[in-house]
Image 1 (cartoon, helix red, strand yellow):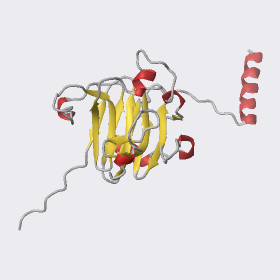
Image 2 (cartoon, rainbow, N blue to C red):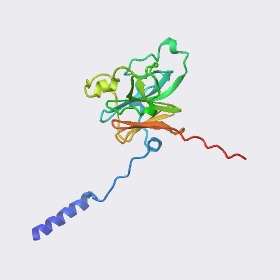
Image 3 (cartoon, one colour):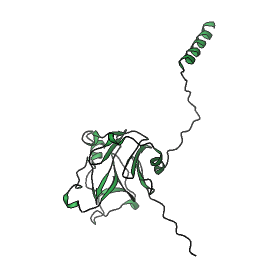
Image 4 (cartoon, one colour):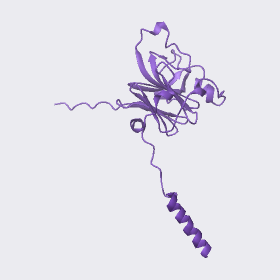
Length: 225
């Protein structure tokens, strides 16, 4: 008994001397729910953008679980400047088009677009509008696109992905971190990525299992006098 008491006292003395603390789990603790996407984008700390720079003022990243890859970049009409997808952004024929800041995300696995979110008739065929891509402009968010094949993200980390190539070389944006370019932000959190224009209240959230499009509420009409 004496040895047990002495041992306990010695352990307590050691803790006091070294300034150590003992963490005890609270079985009744319930973690708070994730913030809504726009609040997450408004409150999350900004990461150092230099680590994610891909040249031409493009910021690109991938989530730690390799399910979502995104770029904060620019578009000329439908032509988006992406470092890992073939595109016509720099073609001289498109120089007449205005340059618009955008956020673009691709998913390795993804849900289908809801009928109300189908934003293109795919050259009048109404075929080939697929999920797996989300796009944000300063005033609008969309999910899905017309295409005949897989995205680069799906080709890299999808069910039959190569696990190699330009997507695999992207820097990881840690969970809870935030990036910003030209008024648009993206944050990795809640098992996916949120991107938005905080000042306009427009954005999206995408993950392997679900997506959400966020639009600003309509301005209230003043009462007639």
